Length: 378
Ligand code: HAM
Image 1 (spheres, rainbow, N blue to C red):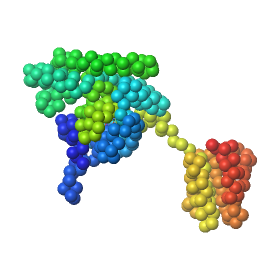
Image 2: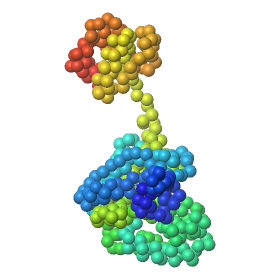
Image 3: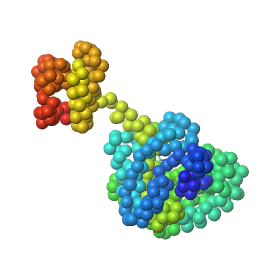
């Protein structure tokens, strides 16, 4: 429901005001293709009456939709892997979430990663800052770019994120949210930094990091990579202590992040781009052989092997050629003779001495098959 995203993400945000795919369904209800997952997770928790169950660790992966200008690393339909840690207020959960995001990207071998962090304080800190910031903006309105002028009353905090060079320069003299943070919020933030240091996770502080969604409180973070170009943020997240309550649930602090999978693939391209060779190519001929082959391929795929089943009915020599072209590590041959005897032949394909390691295995002998796979492929 469109209402969910307006309430959850915030009316003045770019996502809600410019980027949603919204339509009326046949029952005249306003629906929206989800632009992100956090508001929906909050909704699901509340609707199922579990928003106040302590400590839930949730994740999701799927398509999201935003009407943005497409370019490299920015699509109108993209995919997110999201993680939400619900019900925990302590800085430890911030650290666990940030470390998880950092480690996922690190383990995938992604280079040139930067973690940027900021704190947005709690609601009171923000209101105090906003008053004085809006005052200052009104005074300096004429020096701001048009987009920022329009945001003064709608969503002033987003002006801090402006990419306009002149606006950026003028903002250097604006009041800073950081100076309006309460003792408690400041302490929380310095605690977070200390714990990141203990874990040896390097971070950069970026006081202009406000994120494009209204629900954040305290910790906001992004992980960028220099290798990505202009759309450099591969992961964004933060704490949203008021969202679930504000949407009708219990008082439930939470923190999470989402990784953009298309950007991740761009980054991991080199590592993930190596095509996996076929493990086993099944050569077969004749009706009975074919159905035995299909059955066998299903069995083999249970071992997470890349199995290519030739169903062309072509001559053996053509099928051999295809196996060769695919650089298959091994082949299975099932011809008329094999089918009649209920067996198949299996051997490594690149073996110099042809047939050296060839084995004949009965279709019923799963142990022998598994032993062969263990010795040669697994
Ligand atoms: P977000 O920063 O709007 O946060 O999106 C997270 C990530 O999704 C971005 O860092 C980026 O990698 C990817 N992404 C966003 N828009 C696009 C696009 N148009 N094309 C390709 N990739 C894109 C959220 O959505 C929050 N729900 C994250 C979160 C979870 N905060 C707390 N919990």
